[in-house]
Image (cartoon, rainbow, N blue to C red):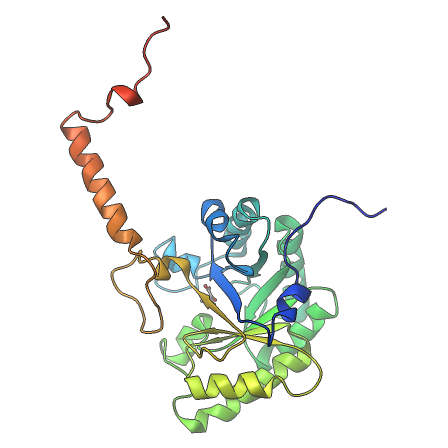
Length: 277
Ligand code: KIV
């Protein structure tokens, strides 16, 4: 009755077991080849709605649709076999009601085979998180700087640099834990607040992992947008470390190709099919 088809992917339980052992490692991927390159090195791959900006040149994540997220998550699933894959629910696909969120998240999981979904929000979406987790959908929450709320937050501003703001974020963290989220992304947040939330969420007997991006090295794990850390763009936010300069490498390759095509040095004899002998 149980399929013995091999599934070596990490699970939510595997991820939670890492808390207090070593930091959880994550990156974004939107395509099969990128997922394939990172599969060995990360615990989970986030198919982030940041793909709207990174792949499609949009100004924000607001125009990203569930169909786009599903298509890219299918590619990431095909390109990976070890890391857990999480699909980011896009703007408009979960806020209306817990029922809407369940309908869309279950469709996403059925069509892609991903293991969990992420959604932005704290207290405001706690009833939705509870509804989904009670129906077997693991949820990663996302608090602090919430890119889908850019139009109400007034831009991409680091959160919690003023202590007066802390209470609101602590309440969000407590609410998503109480609702059953297995992890919470802390984005664009003052280090002290991120540390406080990480410690505070350890109280009690339920585990929930904090995943930092522009937050603190004290978080239970880290995530970055791969194209940012690979150096695809001329400039990054302060919190991004550039681990490579792929943009420069691509520029050099495209220039050399263009030069060789124009001078008829490409294709060379080794790249050409001759006639049968
Ligand atoms: O969309 C995304 O890539 C994200 C991460 C930056 C956390 O939400």
